[in-house]
Amino acid sequence: MRIRMTNASLFRPLFAGITAAAVVILTGCPRPESDPQEQAAAEPPPAAEASRAITYAPDDPALEWGPCPEFMPEGCGIAVLQGDPEDVNADVLLRMAPDTTIPEHWHTSAERMVLISGELHVDYEGQEPVVLTAGTYAYGPGGLSHETYCAPGEECLLFIAFEDPVDAIPVTEEPAPGSAEVALTWTHDAPDLEWGPCPEFMPEGCGIAVLQGDPEQPNADVFFRMAPGTTVPNHWHTSAERMVLVSGRMQVDYEGQEPVVLTPGTYAFGPAELPHETVCEDTGEDCVLLIAFEEPVDAHPVGLGH
Image (cartoon, rainbow, N blue to C red):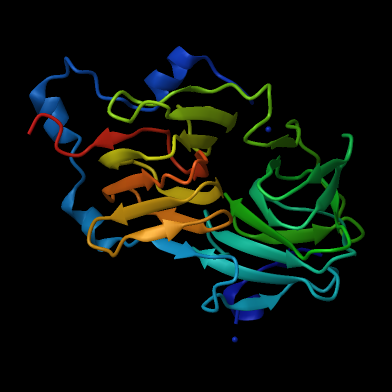
């Protein structure tokens, strides 16, 4: 039995470390010697102006929580952040009460995740169990069965970026097909996480770490790091950005909208090609942002050469 999560039924009232040189190439930094006509072509098209960024704090009263599938425990809830769960590239929050377990299940889609609160134990088939704490990134391949337990104490709140339509299939009803990929977890301060530089137009102290995927291909995940008191000038991306702030305090000014301030656990959706400026406020702490890209990773400064 496949349990498909649809708007109507539910939502009503770990490829680590690429070289530093590769990061510079893959983040789409325009070269200083680029032809002016090529630079002009990098300007975002007017159609981008129709798109709007979205932000939600974890406790935002505007979030609409619906129930989880029936095989999941009491107190479980799902809120859609952006997109259509019956289509590709939807983002959700999953809420679990403390000391509850979601029994073994699997998803058609890969899950690209950050734990926002609580302590979550995840047991993926064929791997050692992992423990997620607030700010931990996790990647769960499509088709890989797993069991999830929220430890006593604080409610577990998990951000999940799906690639394919949202579903959840208990293994008691349909065995998992398995996956050639393995699940991955990363914290932003992991000693073996490899950080490379940002494009040249971004400030000193900026860094990018690839968490999973190939930045030249769709659906790669990165940690993006900014030093406190620094600014990334107005720029845009070919891809939409699906984000959660992991540490620090960040202000983002999207073209045509009021500036927004992100604190740890805040979700943000940045539409493709929408120009924005980003400031890491001088709190003494680095701003670290999880970004799940849909398209290959790039970054284009606005107005270069004009």
